[in-house]
Length: 390
Image (cartoon, rainbow, N blue to C red):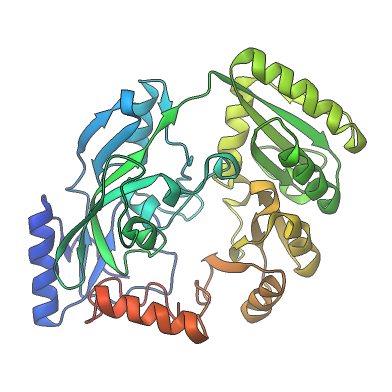
């Protein structure tokens, strides 16, 4: 890993980013792109000559609460944005996880980093992924060209939707300098229904049933006994949690309906709003697995197949997104982990560990990805090696 203090460029404007990237391309240098640096450990290691830090691009450009739109530079921290929109009774709808403690990082996660990694929290099952709220961007390609796409309204896309292409590219296609996102009103209150002692299969069925019920579940997670027993929960049995948000009367009525619909899975207990927020923050940040040194996988599968991940792979699991997101602590062979996850219709990313983080692409998808990379960054200036074979 590079010495961040010794070899860092910290531009203050998009034009300066253009100059740095263009100069790197002209001189044959490569750049590691960082926001807060919290996710530098994810990936196969960036063999770059210089770190390009976006810490100097940390201003909110425009915020129109009445229009539910916010434009900010990519280096603005998530904490600052969450505080800003909360003061207006609003929220970042995709509930982005910070993950700094999970990854052993000391920096502060940024908006650009969250979008570049397409990171979404528990509310994804209701509100959608980060990319779904990514309305527009200003960015610098590996060619040293400043590009702009999208805007401040949802129905503004002509041609290619570059925002969705950049989301999840981990800084390998372009350097985000400015982004526009959609925000939403924050819920007036919330409650969480808890079911105890369910097996993974039972919990998966309960979460699927809850999400199919007409109650607008905004969080569905399952902590098996091994995960629930860890700090901070320190529970004695498995916990299955279902969140409801909105106006108080609506939340209460929907909670009653859901509790009755789930009687076949046991009697549900309820968390008040404060304890519910605390619980979901723990799920979002995967706090149960913070201090464990074992390799940590982030696995995406169809929600109905979630429990089968735990059956197929040895290790401790934590389920989010109604079973669609599985965090797995496992010393299993990476090739076997990926093969078994692929057989379930999903894919696996190694967030902590020594093996390749991203699943190698094959066939037409690999060819298409290579063509896109060549179009945006033909000289391989940006984050070389970050996504490995992907």
